[in-house]
Amino acid sequence: MNPITNGRLFGHPLDRIFALYMAAAAFALAFPHRPANSPLLLALHVLVIALAWPLIDVERFVPALGPQWRTRIRSLMDWAPLGIMPLLYTELATLNVAVHGGRYFDDIIIGWEQALFGGQPSQEWAASVPALWLSEPLHAAYLSYYFIIFAPPLVLFFRGERDRFRAGVFALMLAFFVHYLFFIYFPVQGPRYLYPAPTGELENGAMYQLVHRVLEAGSSQGSAFPSSHVGVSVAQTLVVWRFLPRLAPLITVLTIGLALGAIYGGFHYATDAVLGALLGALVFMIAEPLRMRLRTGRA
Image (tube, rainbow, N blue to C red):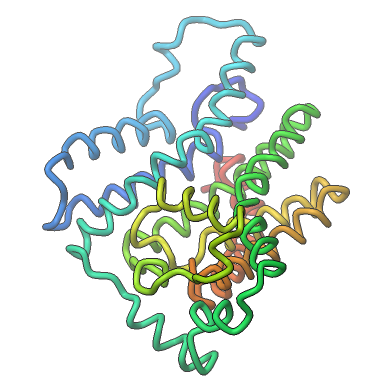
C-alpha cells in the first residue's frame, strides 16, 4: 500500500532513510571509545528508528484525526528532519571519537592534495591573492549555505507543491546523511583546525568576520571530508534546476561561490570540495529512484 496516499503519518520514504541513517550512526556507539552518555544517545536513536520505519504500529496509539489534521501533522513531520539536522550535526564529533578515539585522517587528505594539486590550495590561494574584493564575496557565498538549504523547500511548500517538496527534501536529506556517515567513520578535521586562518587585510572584512563567528559557534570537529557544504549545495542546486528553474541560476552561482569560498577561506581542502561536489551529484541521481522504491514498498 502506498504510504503517501493511505493517510499514514509514519513510514514515508523520508522517514525511512532517516531511520536507516539513525541505525548506521548508532552503530558507532558499539565502539570502545563511546561516551558516558551513550545509553541515552542509543535510546534516542532507537526511538527515532521505531517511529520512522516504523518498527511498531505507532498509528494505533494516535487518536482518530480528521484528514485536515493528519495533513498538518504530516507536513510538520516532513520538516522535522531538516529542523533537527543541527542536533545530528552536533553529535558527529562524539560519534567519530567513539569510533576512532580522537584520530583524524587529515594526513591522507593532505597527501591527496599534494598529489592532485601540487600544493595546498586551502593555504596558498588566499595568501597569493589577499584581496577584500575576492575574499568578501567568497565568504558571503560560503555563508549562503543556509539560504541554499532552506529557500527552495520553503518556496515549494508554500506553493502547495507537496510531492515536489517531499522529493526535494528527500534528496537533500539523503545528501546530508551520506556525508554525515563519512564524518563518523572517516573523520577529517580540515585545514581550519590545523592551520591559521588567512590574515592581514582580509580580517577587516565584515563577511570574513561573520563566517568565522558562525563556525566558532557551531562547528563539529571531524566533519570536513567530503565537504557537506559543497555536496549538499550541489544536490540542492540540481533539485532546483528540476523543480524551480527560475531560481536555479541564483542557486548555481551561490553554490559555485560557496565551493570556491570553502577553499579560499581555508575551511576545506580542495579535495573535500571536489569529492563533495561529485558525491552531491551522485546522491541527486539516485535519490528519486530510491524514493520511488521506498514509496511503493519495494525497498
